[in-house]
Image 1 (cartoon, rainbow, N blue to C red):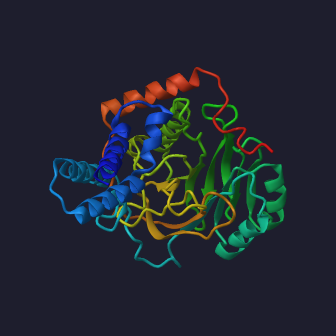
Image 2: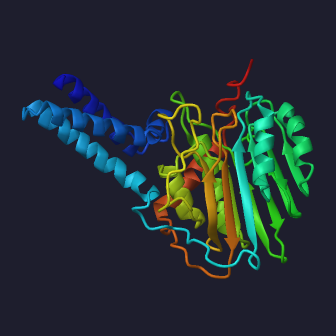
Image 3: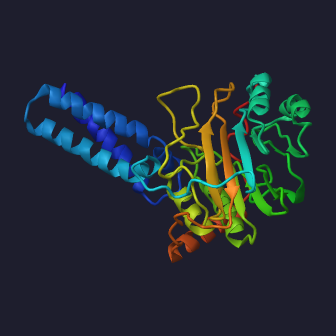
Amino acid sequence: MSAVLFVLALICLLATAIPLLPFAHGIVRSFDFGRLQAIAVAILVIVAALAVWETTPVLLATVGMAVIAIGIQLVYVVRFTPLWPVQTARFEGNTENTPTISVLACNVKQGNRDYQRVIDLVNRCQPDIAVFMETDRAWAEALRPCLSKFHERIEQPQEDSYGMIFASQFPLGEREVCFLLNEEVPSISCVVQLPGGRDIRMVAIHPEPPLPIRDTLGRDAEILVAAKIARDEPLPVVVTGDLNDVAWSRTTRRFLRISGLLDPRQGRGLFNSFDARYWFLRWPLDHIFHSPDFELVSIGRQEFVGSDHFPMFYRLALTARNRNDPPPQPSTDDIKEADAAINVEANRSRRPAGVDWEDN
């Protein structure tokens, strides 16, 4: 029993230490995802070790490793609990005389054919903006009648799990389907004209997932390109999508520093959106980030729609105030490492990860 607990504690400690390595490789970065699971296992190890009630060197080492693992992991995840100060202020005004925007972000999973669940979700939430990822031609056809009530649509269906649809109840100004670094990985950038005449920039992205057999520069670089777009945008900005990266990762934290955007989950909750099929394997993978011009009206994870992702629904208020807690400023290393990652990925040609996952 003691040996088993020792091994489990050692695994937790290694799983905690590996993502601290400064290597952009899937083997390393994948350990960013399981921080909650590592905490849970470490807690069980401590409880089991205390139940044995022996002060042997092995059990003392076991408890020590588990405590260290929990402590390090909490440094990353505690900011997504009510124990941490909120970064985005709660809107306390009147939504009747303040421009608001509601956003539904939904990775439908290309192989999922339960179209009606997604249609019912759209009809129930009635979002101002709906962003769908992993949409192939079949999904585009199935959603078209439901989305016909929206003022405008941008459709980029693809058969490789990187398709995207953007639907808006509001008029759109400038709009573009962009291929930031890879000709098979689209993103959508557009100017949304809110009621009252105010414009905002919305960017929807869905970069590559990390794989243990290759580096993560494709994902990381695209996220950092989006950070630079947000940083240089004079309009209020909202960035949303399935980033295939957890909220506490090295790359996402660097994204926030470079972009100057805020994460409304900080100080509120994890809002784990993946994997919707397995309760014990979940982490926050679907995001919305916004400039300090916005305050949070509401945020919520939606019901299961047949995908491996839970949809997320957000409502933001565009205010003239700035009561938000801003992210730290980027360091010189942040800029240098972001530029290096973008330069490497921009100068090589390879297929994105996961293009064949939905092949029948």
